[in-house]
Image (tube, rainbow over all chains, first blue to last red; front, side, top):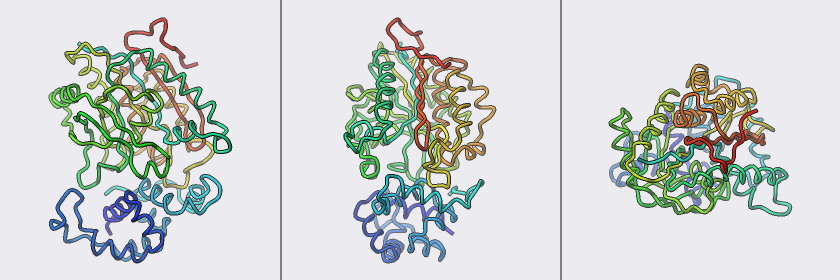
Length: 120
Length: 295
């Protein structure tokens, strides 16, 4: 399990407008490409000097590939990264302001404290 | 020595810019009241006639990332670009360009380390909405140099609440020992109860109005002792999963001083979070300084 890598995926997609669209339209393909090509990139280092050990667990990979934010929350993805990226992905599909955000909350309504640990 | 002209603590609501600039059907029903409260709050800074702004906020996973995460960081650069693509996308925030005060940055870094805080620094820092929101609300002219101070309220492990208060006390002491004739306003933004990315997010009020009531009372009365006695890294999950941002209020209470009652207090109960605005005039309010004490 790699909460850090989950967060790194959310972070690097969220900050890039082209990747946000790519992930919206082809989640499974984007996750496969990202894990193969991008997961090991250390953000402040030259591309050749990358980590060699980063990999998702099967559950993490599948949750990302299916846009399953409830499972990502339960796997300990950082709540802020998760919300920000998923607003970018899906808010546009809802007519009412904040409707997506409220649905997001409702789908997590079976959770009470303590929430899954977001520590990395 | 420099003068601390004002100490200001507030929430930083990223939707203010859009709400305040929207018109017609796009303008939310609460916008006019919000704008009026902000305009009155802004007067507290204007009346203090600052030359430099020390701005305390927190990077929201923009430039600072989990591969190299500082707990407390001070920017030291002549300029700062500000706001990010995802803030433009979600909040409609404009790109901004800020001037820095490198001399004060360097002074706070050196003296802060000598005072027991091993501060990180950045010579090329892109600022986010935790600092641009209070500039938009309090100094929309954006005509003063800043010193950005970033705290980690986001990525555990976090510093203890008491450490935030102590950093605030240290910043106050250091600014007052800066060999300069400038008037410095110290401004910091944090959160009251707040939930983001969890089941209690975006309700009709903040997720924990009782916490908000207590927090506003602690801040208004400068009651750091009670706040620190009741708040811990574990307890701050209870009011909402983004409530660790309250620690930036603790930092500002440290700047204001233990027991220092705020000279100006206001709040606004908005959807999903409570807005709160506080100003202290360390020189004592002048006849022209806006004063609005807690009831």
